[in-house]
Length: 272
Image 1 (cartoon, rainbow, N blue to C red):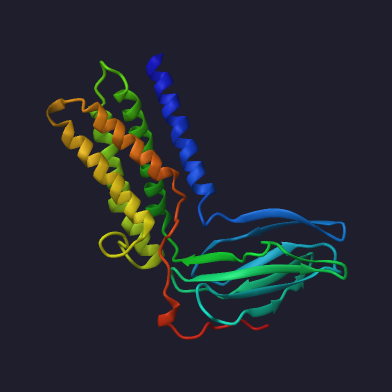
Image 2: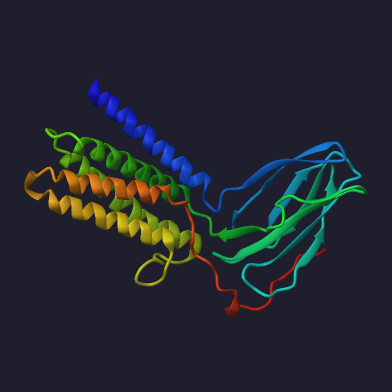
């Protein structure tokens, strides 16, 4: 019964940390509702999109007296803002952002207006969207599953390390092995498909996702080495488990790959 309880605790911690990482990341869509002229308007503004096509923004607006404009420019540039009027398609307002190369980012605002009111759906700050290459499901799904299992066994190893008579060695080996496979094998392949580079962390660059994965792997390798010969190495295992939990609490894709627009020409625009 105690072992079942330990697994439930480990699973709850793993799921909670994974959800936190996803929801707090800079690629999670901005969702909400607003009121204009007694009309409630729900919206979803993407912050991550594939490079294969322009990002079409469609907002359901039944009230034909409400119009809108889309303004955008390349992130971290002195480009002038480009303004596009939303077109009406049946009961929706529609406009598009031009697709960008992998890791390219655009800043954009959606502004809805009527005779009485004008509102920016994202407030004063623009939304920042990053474009990425499509990642095959055969790569992305195993990566996500293996990283989830790595966190699960890492947490379970940490719980096991708290017991004075238990030996977390087997859980530690599984956690370390899964983290290496998911983070250092599948992870770089995902990165290659999405942004064209296998590795953008230390010592090549400062990508936080790659660097935090590297730190977590080093922590678990140290714990495994400390436990060689079958030793429990409880403090090492507990430390590696806490380290991975801290890594998972860092928002996903924070300080991720970013295209340097200073090396490129002007932004191509869409027909207004």
